[in-house]
Amino acid sequence: MRRRIDFMLRLLFLLCTSIGIVALAVLIVSIVVDGFRYIRPELFLNYPSRRAAQAGMKSAIVGSIYMLLMMAPISFVFGVGAAIYLEEYAKKNRATRFIQLNISTLAGVPSIVYGILGLTIFVRFFALERSLISGTLTMTLLVLPVIIVSAQEAIKAVPKIRRDASFALGADKWQTVSRAVLPSAMPGILTGVILAMSRAIGETAPLVMIGALTYISFLPSSLKDSFSVMPIQIFNWISRPQEEFHSLAAAGIMVLLALLLLMNFSAILLRNKFQKHI
Image (cartoon, rainbow, N blue to C red; front, side, top):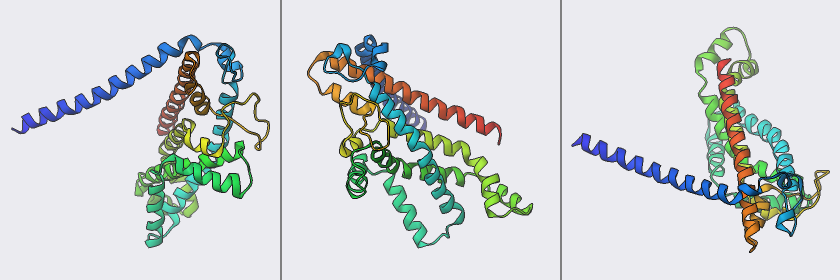
């Protein structure tokens, strides 16, 4: 009886997995078929246009890269710093548990809430307007809880014996954290940071809330300039009635997927590289 139940459950799990894989494969094939003919140099070199034959997503690609380059160091410093404090320095009391509960809750909050928060704080309160810096800070708020939680889990996974050995050799608290704990936790930390960046680069709702432009024919030259990103440009194209823009949107999705796959592949390479040195 148990073997029969086990066999039935394995079939059920295999069926569920197959449905997800098949649906994803059909979606990817459909996107590739529609957008492959628009994967050309003009897509990367031209600015958005009302004519599909001349339209590109240069400003959106550059805006996404700018935002990613600014988000990464800010998110890493504040996210990993908060994780180190909560795991290594903060006392385990009610206040710490309350903070931890709120961070875990924020990691699952819908992204549109962060868009409203960014609109209220950065765009209106600090008067940063609908600029690149507003978008960067809003997306940093979005990924911070995810980075903190993943960094905490990576730090927790470091064996206690490493800390004890460091203290036994006469190291103080910070020397132990920086030279024994962090090098061992770095593969998990970097993986969490890059995956959080991957999530942010594909988000649309928060940037719509703070006013990222759907049509922009210049590159941002300062942090206060207006900007666009790839998900916003794709959303603009897919909402147009012309079939050519739908194919352009499919090509944009292919570019965005390639960037996400590259980031995930980088996370795997960095994790494997650091694990070899542990």
